[in-house]
Amino acid sequence: MAAETSVSREPDRAAIIPWRGLMAAVLAVAVGWGGIAYAANNSVQGAAKKEDGGFDGDAPTAILVEASSGSVLFEKNADELRAPSSMMKLMTVEVVFDAIKQGKVKPTDEYRISENAWRRGGAPAGGSTMFAILNSKVSVDDLLKGAIIQSGNDSCMALAEGMAGNERIFAADFMTKRARELGLTKSTFGNSSGLPDPANKMTVRELAKLARHLILTYPDMYKLFGEREFTWNKIRQQNRNPLLNTLNGADGLKTGYTKEGGYGMVGSAVQNDTRLIVVINGLEDADDRASEAKKMLEWGFRNFETRTLFAANQQVGYAKVFGGESRSVKLASPEPIKVMVPKNGSEKLIARIVYNGPVRAPIESGQPVGLVKVWRGRNIAVEAPVYAAESVGTGSTVRRAIDGVSELVIGMFRASAEKL
Image 1 (tube, helix red, strand yellow):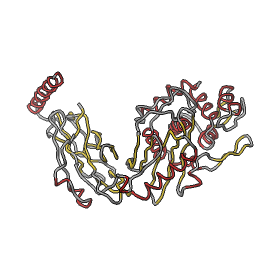
Image 2 (image 1 turned 90 degrees about the vertical axis):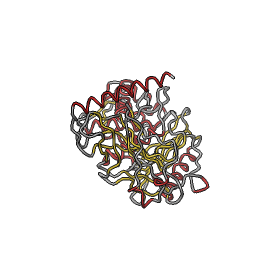
Image 3 (image 1 turned 180 degrees about the horizontal axis):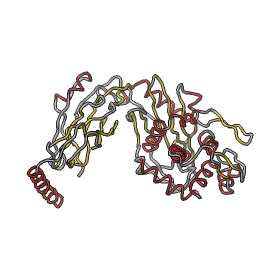
Image 4 (image 1 turned 180 degrees about the vertical axis):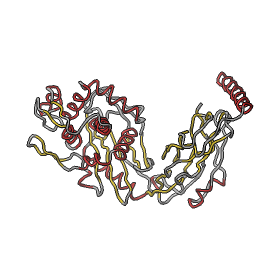
């Protein structure tokens, strides 16, 4: 059963505090035997309104994320499914990166450029291409460069056919399966390139999550996104990402355009040891796309700073335990839980622990239990996994019997309530 500290009232005055007192201000909130969660309900200085320096953008869908913590600084229709166009190539690239990391594919492996890849994705198609020659064999390493730097449709098709036999199988079995493993629950794929297909749908939030994963998981391979040019078949092409030449610290990731999806971009840059990721989609002009992405990143760097909500291994809260020698277990994170907050303002952050509970004993120290989610207004600013900070052994027979009866009674009560 899912448990969440759902706080519908205003936080206690003790929880509305200046930043310096945040660490000690933890408010316990019980939500019933079906899963008691204890969470921080804290407020920090912030600003989100336009008149207080908030962002006002033109993109129909957009999101701005800090890469290290995953903090969401701005979002607009971030969960709306749209055609991702060539931005979807990031999913194809991730599948290949993962296969290389696992040793299933080598960068030196060579895949043949089929007539399908050449005709639909190569020079005859008139779209973005690496100009691979029909029936030639190209290494995985070069195909990745073609896909990332030149946005080659032929590159992606050759990778898909080389790994899965055909593009449809790659999209359905490789891309979709991997997306679900990464927590991309809404994304669907009809091909490897992002060329128009009714099945190609992604949200800017999931594109940002995918970009963050690529950056953090494959730091060496991610460097390909910052390469300024690539020459293949004696044809030299520039990287299509306009941020590389207009914004300090920009090093990725991908632009996209189809008539259905409009102009979009996944961009990232680092300034003063802070990396931000921006995703926009649905604009009507390529220049607007470039200026919008740059404007949003500059706004984020200018107005936000990173602060620590909970230090590494600091107690975050509790979770209810079923059948244990203790009735609750302390929760913590081995990594600091950080969030990007506005440098000035009066915005409040609400932190809640969400988990399936009560957690059945025995519980091992370090066992994953749930998530701490931090809300900025109605939007989730950051979420991070929390783990048992201690071991809890199995309780006595009497303890387990009492817990069992309590769960039965509450289950009956909830079932009756649902019928009303």
